[in-house]
Length: 210
Image (tube, rainbow, N blue to C red; front, top):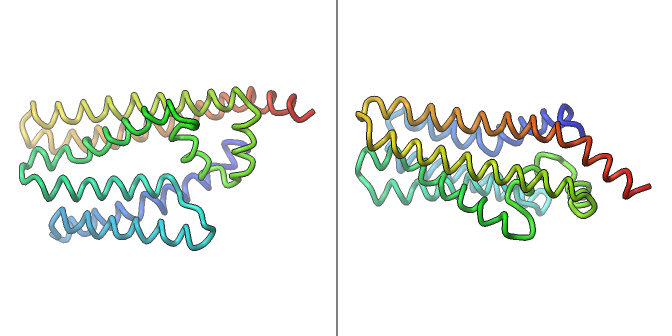
């Protein structure tokens, strides 16, 4: 499947699995709801999304599970800490945990981004077939996971450094910008790399199927 044809599907998945829960969290925060309660409600939205996905087709989106875990860890950190700087870096600590999970997945049968990109593809059977028959495809997914691992861990370290070693008013502005910028950069790189690597994957699959 071409990257162009997959873009609308990627946008839809990101909107539903990520955008809606985070929109709920931001709106509640703007309305003066406590950060912990806002996280609980947003986490509830993520949980509903996971349940609906499973009820509809007996599958669970890897991205929606990650978002749910992120909110759950955010609630835990918010409850355990009243320090403004710790609250400020709670997302970075969660990001680091996701980065570590991605790192561990590199040593498992299939890396983390394999499952996330499979959900974006819209054809799980074809995705599994590509993994089985194409070494280039397997390499592409492992390289993608490795880059996301490095990016997430670097972003987390940078945000923690800014939060604790700069004035709080500066950290409040810089930390969210670092988080959003790094994620956008990783998504853009993933789209570029997937498009660049696809011809080699398609050529390999064509040989196997001929």
